[in-house]
Length: 366
Figure 1 (cartoon, rainbow, N blue to C red):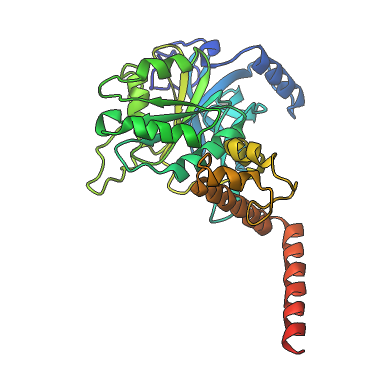
Figure 2 (spheres, rainbow, N blue to C red):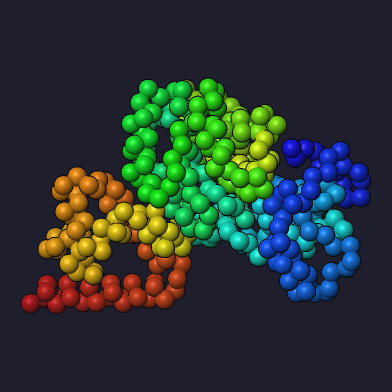
């Protein structure tokens, strides 16, 4: 297990995990060597590879072959939110400073609604667990949104329905989850009774990294503690009387599970904004995309067009209308975000509005 107490560089740690146990493999080594060649000025011989276990603003705790260490982050990396190290990143450490972040294999990202920027939640993950609590009413639209984020990473998405011991109709919710998660495994688990935990653990191979995403109160930290036999030591809290979760996880943290797999716990997502997720939308709604291939027209809007295979599927019960509306809503959201962040699209929208206004005026003054 990874011990949670870091020591300054140069001191002897109480535990010395191998860097390979933190996911460092031949592919990462290639990226590390390439990063060293690009460093200006060149990295000294004392440079070493490491993995970020968690980060606190300008400092982070990393795991190396000599143990866990707390190091600072170079100023040039802090200048860009996308380039700054995040939990799960493989990095180059020189003395007591992170001087470079290796190219990310995968990244979990979301849009920040306030400044329209992208936020990197975790890096270099193999599996994304979209976690939803069965203690709360089933919300398929929220799970769909989580799955879009998961598909966008390039990692393997898995739906995890927690707190099965709190739900009398877990089987029905499971069937509903399967319908909104085509191509994904769905696990119903209870950290309290142990139900489904063995099956979920089998999905997480040693030295691979998973990340949990979901709202506060979904049971992510409790799940990580159960999968690590309590060694993760992540803080948990009781659900509030209104059914909402308490925001107990305040930082993204990488821990080791009892089977040797790695897991990143994340704070609950209050707002789940999608960033550049057009392709991921097609993956998350692959059932709708597949049906649309049977439409008579390539640009079918699935509204009133003749020969629409999607409408036929809704009419005969093969597709839920609410799922199609969810897909359309997320597509509109992506277009709005793109229009607000891309100058070219803003100009096009302005031209379209001017043309529309011109047409309206011409009809009014006839």
